[in-house]
Picture 1 (cartoon, rainbow, N blue to C red):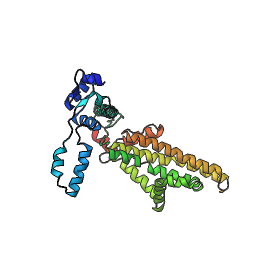
Picture 2 (picture 1 turned 90 degrees about the vertical axis):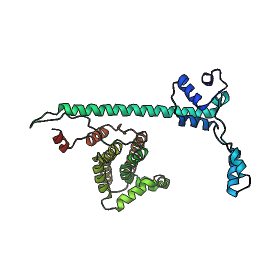
Picture 3 (picture 1 turned 90 degrees about the horizontal axis):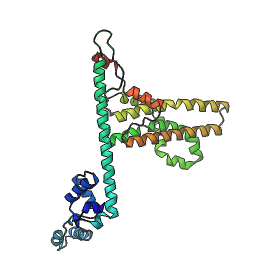
Length: 313
């Protein structure tokens, strides 16, 4: 790669490097990414020893501070063969290539999403018929707010603290037997404690989550999806609740190993689901790999209210 970039030249400046990478590697870099490559190789930077002396002179107001300021000029940016074959350049270039790939992938996904939204709106307009018996063909609906910034991805991950806190109650006997687990899952235990202290805490959270999941204009779609899916996961815990209650009843209320193991399995299964959902959210994608639960989530958050149908008709 270094030979292709340099050709017959002894070295390249920043703009020349950006142009050569585009010509030989088919990778289009902006100026900021080019500066990152230079910085990774120590180019265009003030020498560290001079910078340290200047900081010390400015801190203590030494007489040679002006002289040091004149010396503190950035080194010229000139990529030689040794620079282009260095591990620092190769590592930073791989990082830039990955960023470009992810940016292109997200742009393609966004374009595909917008295209489907336009087709959906066209389909809704074309299938609506005038008159008393007007009907609209169901299908994908416009999603409204689709902000997938870092803050919204974190909020989407936090939605799963609700089902996790409920599932943690089943793991309390196991945590009592192994105290390190209590420390490891301290944040989840803290949320569980808060929900238990507040009267009807879990029910209030469920109601709030349901209402926010339907607020298409005010809450981003990614957050709405995870709010609704966390509600469905929380409801799905009623199944192990019933099974564990049956086990305790058969044991006549006495603690049993089956109940402890069943509770632990329930919690760790919910933990695995939550980790999967968080990983998808961090990547900016809906965690829709939960089969029936994810399908139901889509149906709920994409449902068109009756008022909107009447307006279309």
